[in-house]
Image 1: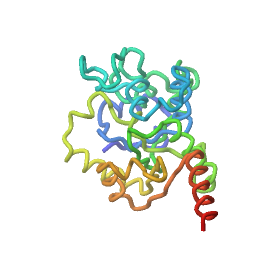
Image 2: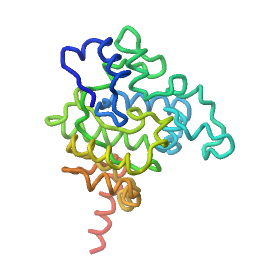
Image 3: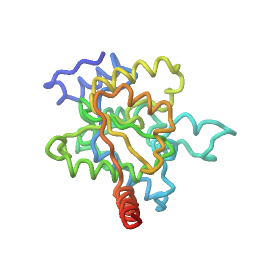
Length: 245
């Protein structure tokens, strides 16, 4: 298990040494809201249609993952791996930032972020989502959650456990289900608070995914997050039902 001391966290050399000597497969580090916003900005710069950007598409086309290497069976069509954030290093995005873009002197050219801005030592909120969900709506939901819970989760220090930048998406499929079930259980229980992204609110995708249900079962505490668009839809339905009474 990776061990960090708080003094050492300020030194890139120690972090890099830990990365190559004793990094767990499932990370305990988390990422800040700034990284989600940077993903969003990069995605929309490539396709302005927000509805296009499912979490699966962000994983494949922006972050990069093993699926785009399938020669004839990639559901996203032909994708140039070199246009993704992690193909050159074939490691998690957080470790690309750690080794190449540690501080403000050398920010990532596409994300305009450094490791220090994007990554925290310990995630304190776990995000449960389905890959079919819309990424742009997810970012909006996270922004809204931090706005309304700023006392407990300050925007500058809150870190989320989110699969895309934290796990190695090029090798994740190499491990069996039993391995991931155990390691995810440990991670979810250790973090202690899961945000369940409901989209759409009337028929949430995560309730149809066994893996998401498993994450909920492991979670000591669960909160629901909705995008502003979904909240507006929910409120409209309430008004319609009330008027029909």
